[in-house]
Image (cartoon, rainbow, N blue to C red; front, side, top):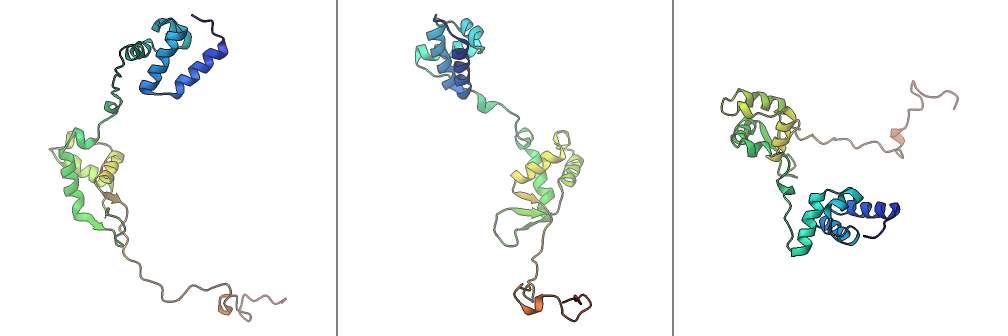
Length: 184
């Protein structure tokens, strides 16, 4: 094992932090082979890495077979996956109150119903009352289903008179009116 200075150890640690997944494990395995004699324990004490990751990297380097990560399986599942019936109930509750985009710029449906109202109505349904999430999660679920929870705005009528322009004579203050400056 070669003697390492503190600066070299810090450089190797920062290089490992920049990598992820199998690239990090490969780098850690190569460093463990070069500086720690292939020992995952020495790499753990010297560099502060997890010895299981170093051991896996050494195995990958030795066999040439890369282990698959299960990072895509982590995290919380969506409410629709945990309770598929809640999606149908939410659609039935929101659909009578929806309206398409007045300008047809998006495919989203606007609704007047709030997420809190949908949540309360779902809690009243005996089939799904055990798996009703919070108000914020109901709002996110409705957004994923294609509904936008905002006030439905009817088409505004166009103004008949144009906006006054600063260069127009009629848009300035009246000279003889009550607000006229007498010192001019």
